[in-house]
Amino acid sequence: MGRFGGSRAETRPDHSDPGLRGRRYAIPFEEVWSAAKILAGSELPRWTLVEADDREGWIRAESRTRLFGFVDDVEIRIGLDPEGQTRVDLTSASRKGAWDLGTNARRVRHFLGELDRALEARGHATLPPMVPGAGAPAGHEG
Image 1 (cartoon, rainbow, N blue to C red):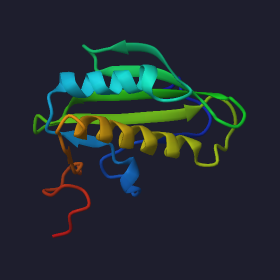
Image 2: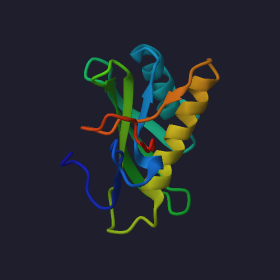
Image 3: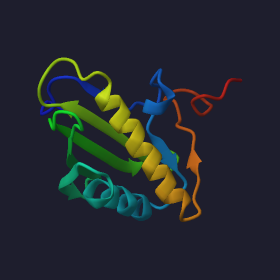
């Protein structure tokens, strides 16, 4: 991920912020891919789809900040997890500056929320993320 500079937010299954744990879906890759690509390409304001590779499972987009119009980079990664569920992770990074005032984290949460809504509108549900090395989904206490 060397192309990202400045301030950034990135999902991880074990992230301390539940909104930045990415998503798992019991939905075929193609449906999740299609919904994510539509969101990044035309559904979200101030987003522009730059390139996408369905074989490698990544979408690159640019998003402009509302206030100053700075362009930030977003990479969406979609693939199958070890259980065969479709996994979605994102990185959002500012091109300039060391501080983003939480913009990148808000952008990641917003995208994932919109993706959830788009897939739920098709009758699908979101699964909790799996924490690597743990026997239970993240957020489930035993």
